[in-house]
Picture 1 (cartoon, one colour):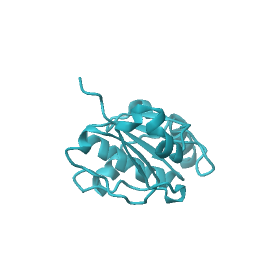
Picture 2 (cartoon, helix red, strand yellow):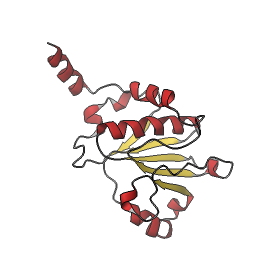
Picture 3 (cartoon, rainbow, N blue to C red):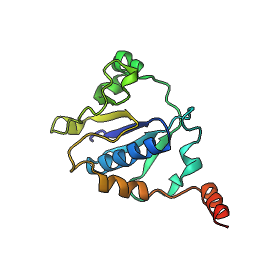
Picture 4 (cartoon, rainbow, N blue to C red):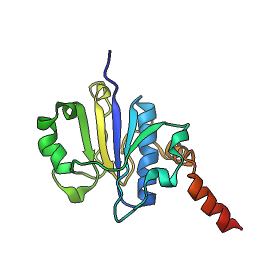
Length: 163
């Protein structure tokens, strides 16, 4: 059978940036029939796991898998990834975090053609996917973000704040 294609979205910076990139990644994954894997690192921008903030067990719009840490750096991926682990050779790599150098390019347009449809994607960003509107757009991305439900903890904090 055909190997499932995945879209690995490595979300960066604070909550707003991550949600913007997440909504876009969800739309792109839906519209290109890719399994979505979210890398949600804990760092000084946002020191909370995704499941601390959202009920990720009951995602209806676009189910996804969440990973809280990722051992490979961008330079590991582009310099060594393909040679050390052949699985990475089937990925198209995009990194919008230009500070990381080594080919990172903010707003690099996603290639969407017959050849790219069979490849998995690794996307590291705090920004939206740059692709034609049929693959990601403001309305669909916003709908995906709105589909996220707060975790029980966040819901309780919100209820307490309302009282």
